[in-house]
Amino acid sequence: MQQMESVTVQGVAPWMIWIWVFVGVALCAVIATVYKVVQIVREEKKNRVAEIERIAQAAIQAKTEKLADEISDKVMKAMEDKFQEIDAKLSHDKKELDEHDQTLDRITRTLESVDANIRDMREGFTCLARGTIASLNHQMHNGNGDEMERAARELNDYLTNRPISRMK
Image (cartoon, rainbow, N blue to C red; front, side, top):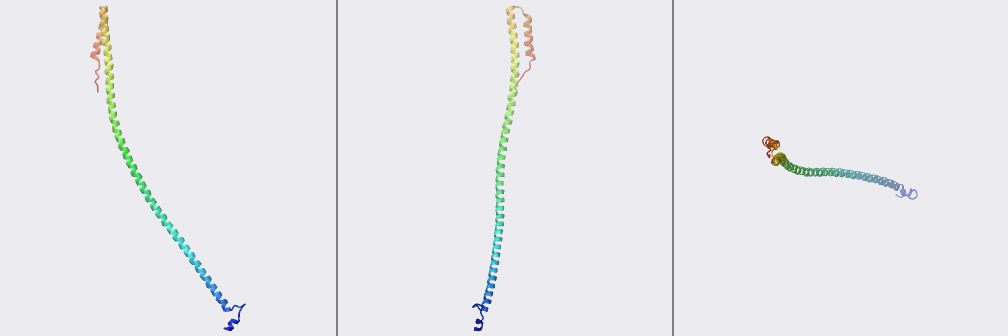
């Protein structure tokens, strides 16, 4: 052993150099392995994060679609209810308008009949007034027979030929 120890390069025996080389190579192999394991762990972590993000995105998408469907259903139900309410109100209003139209038609026919009766009465009063004036003139002037005959004819024509308007 002393012989081995005698051969040294600046106080270092060759076997020590081989040990240091072996330890250095082993250390490099360990470092390379640790580096590779760290890369694999990082890659795996990245893959897991990506998978978790994908799952989260899918869950968010599913929840969003479900909420959108629920909201859409609620909005549609509310709109249907509102439209039914509006339809009911419109039907009620239409029925009232139809009743008002019928009443208005009845009133219009009544007013037309009243107008016809008023025209008829006016014509009658005019004939009676002419007859009365003719009678008064006859009394005052003694013998104005033509005027009396004309008034009598007008009154007779009015009474016999007038249209009879009745309220409808």
